[in-house]
Length: 331
Image (cartoon, rainbow, N blue to C red):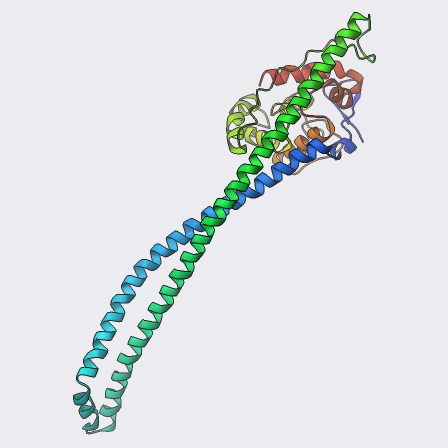
């Protein structure tokens, strides 16, 4: 199934379903694997930090309750001590009771004092055990958090290496394409199907892959939001940036194609399909943007190229290539 492309007004664009679900090559598998590992590690760090804060708050609360309970135990023990000090007179009072009701009331009062003391002591023991258990959980959570932080940093370093490798491969491909065009033109070739197209390569993205995901997204979301302002995709800059980081693609790539294919979502032929891509639809822009970034990485490469353009819009690929390059340069 193919879809009419606004970038190719008289033909259809081959944004094929097979390419949307294309298998990742070895490099792309590594990129996606590092993104998943980084996401798991950072999420685990966040979860452990929440646990640490909850444990600290619980310990603080228990410390206050334990202080109050110690006071209650002290009062109960004092009352019990008084009974024991005056034990003989207390027994005399019970035995000299003139009626059964007085006797039973006196015994019940004594039992209440004794039970209150026991209950307060047990409650104090339970609180202290709970505090000890919570402190042990806190200590373990700190150890686990340190380990997960190391894992997250290692995953981040791996992610940097894989994304820089993808970027270097794209630059090498762009250089090879430029040299091939130059050689073909010197040989008298013609533009079009023969491959001697009059195309302008995209500017370098300037993406700093040495950053962690949060920094990368913060750095790009503003630029992308400015580009998307006033369109149905307005406000999705962070989504595009996060999807680009996860997939390891030029952060401008998907947004630029959305402009070329649908005026940034204004003319979608299927719900949330801003890219003239196959016959698919999505339930939200977030879902669609993520899927498109992965599809680009797997089926079309790190950034726009002649190979990608010939696959995306073969009948008029030079025009499509130049339009996407121009849009990317404006972001």
